[in-house]
Image (cartoon, rainbow, N blue to C red; front, top):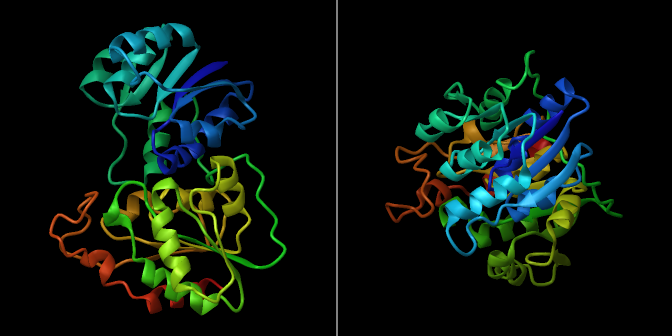
Length: 319
């Protein structure tokens, strides 16, 4: 069974699609997967044991995207079935032009015309469940979704280790404050080695935290890890403190005890999936969830009002 899968662009969203992917592989144990995605999603997913081909979607680069998508579809070729977890015209076109006889995706004006099955997931529901609803159309039996899953081995630390992820690629509205992360780190520095995580655009934020922890031995990995290393290092942690972000979902895939700080996003839709040792710290606000990259009102109270003591107490509850 050859299955073509178009992964979500964002790393966290892609990881939330893994229960649906794993469920499909249980229904079709001989599945040979062709994975298409962003650089970060492919770097995390290419180790899947059923993956026989993987491609970074570069149809945006150079020339006409419609022409690029057509050529890419012909390169991929026909599969037995295909699914896109993206709600994008070009993803629907990619499946249509691939010549695959059975195709499915989230219901939209373009999927209604271009795919053989156009699914409207149950709502409101967690994004993991929405992805399951889309994938269900490819299965003759009910899909049973379980934990998030990555196949990169977790790192083994020599001492108890606490990880902090102060960034969030989506935008500043999802980010708690460096001085507050530093206060939390200081509260546990006598019991844990401290590691700071972050992408290339979050190096300054991590350096700010590091400077506030002068005299404390910490490891700053912001901008220094590959996607594989990021998954491995997070997977081996004893506890993780993070904003709503891709690394938060990496931690859930490895069942790492996690304190997740939420502000402008829908925690019921994108919180950690099936991680028993997970606590969300958030405040109910009239203006939240706004789902904006930056606070549209300029006060950012959904994050600013969360105190370091609240997060410190949440860590105590998990421990």
